[in-house]
Amino acid sequence: MSYARFAACTAALVCLGATLSFAQQTVSEANPPEEQVKQLEHRWLAADAKGDAAALDRIIADDFIGSGFDGRLLSKADIIPEGNSPGGFAGAKAGETDVRIFGDTGVLMGVIDTAAGPQPKPIHVTLVCQKNPHGWQIIAAQLTQMH
Image 1 (cartoon, rainbow, N blue to C red):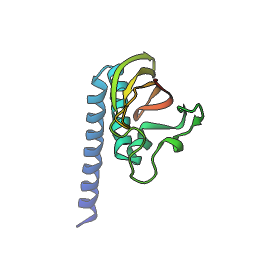
Image 2 (cartoon, rainbow, N blue to C red; image 1 turned 180 degrees about the horizontal axis):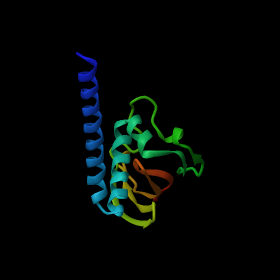
Image 3 (cartoon, helix red, strand yellow; image 1 turned 60 degrees about the vertical axis):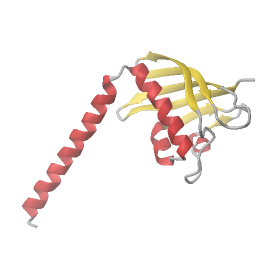
Image 4 (cartoon, rainbow, N blue to C red; image 1 turned 180 degrees about the vertical axis):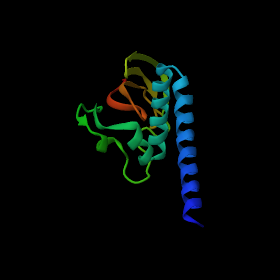
């Protein structure tokens, strides 16, 4: 293959990739921001259930801070499961949620219905999300187990 042909193919692939990336971003941005934040919660729970560390790495901001059930502060490293094992929310489903948007920041308050244990207990969740050029990320979380 000649250099000119290689360069033309490379340029075409770069343009195609940029077009597909823009199209995907445009589709998700067509939804209202409140819906985008709700979808982020669903993607987070699905990635946690599968132990998908790569997806969780994209969903959770590097400077994430959270509070667990025991009150201790959590970092991003604390909540991404090791290896490909499911995380603590395997089988959980997002329940009733309310989202408020403040510019590029969204606050989701709701309930996660857990499936673990003989008597699943709902968890109250507050997620603080921020929109950046790559989409929404979770920057903070507060989880409280209901009794």
